[in-house]
Image: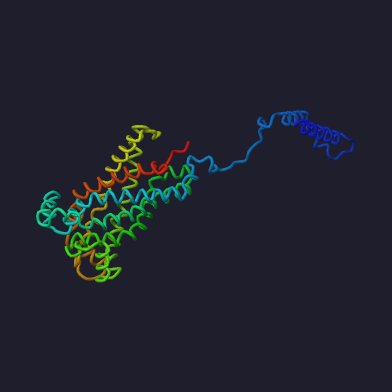
Length: 371
């Protein structure tokens, strides 16, 4: 430090002498006494006290409200695993309700009896085990779907938040959630559709119900081929699942945010409170999602029933089924059963998912308002 001060003082002395020399062309560069004093004060100051003007710079990643370094492949794979488990368990547990709901959609007589009446009629005619038809396809199919849906949603959500920046992500969080949910669900449905077609066939066809999941899938493939057998309901499943998933994630996030604002805005709550908020926000999201996606769900069940809609392309059959049923029945037939089922399923999914992530060593990504 002493050497640096001495060098600076010497330089200023020589500069001043040069400026004062007769005939010097550098006179106009001579520093004023105030300038010399300021320079000496600057070099005499401790390094921490020196203040240099800084050019404008955008916020760096280190100044973000998010620590994106923690959202690695481990985080996304953990989210995918938790999503697969929560979807498989909840849809599997709800299989009896799903059987009744599907049968009500396919059979107008059962549909007119209401959920409990239809369930009682099925058990009376076919036995209690009839309510477990398609359980294998349901458990496997929704594990695969949950893997891609929850894992994909977390991946797209974090990636979009990173690309939009802190303020942009906060201002557009519901739009980003919608985009992330739609992208994840589209990928998930590619894998879900064959298993959902197999499940519906097993629920509606006693011969298929007697077969195992691989056996039923092989029989469908041999009889109808890949596209007709497994993907004739792909467009309806997109119409059903994409609005459902958007509503599910967006409404749940909005509901949870509102509940936390009342309970504890910083989200520092006990595990039991967190679990309760996940369940309550999940019920709200599930009912809204069920109502929004129900017409397409009814159409999907009809499309996968043999002979429904007659011959022709997927869109021709969809048009015939819609005309035959009418808009009101399409929107309401089996809706109560589905609201109960989806409300329960969605609550269970978010309860399990939000519990599994911390147990597996990661914290769920949440949007934060910039400071």
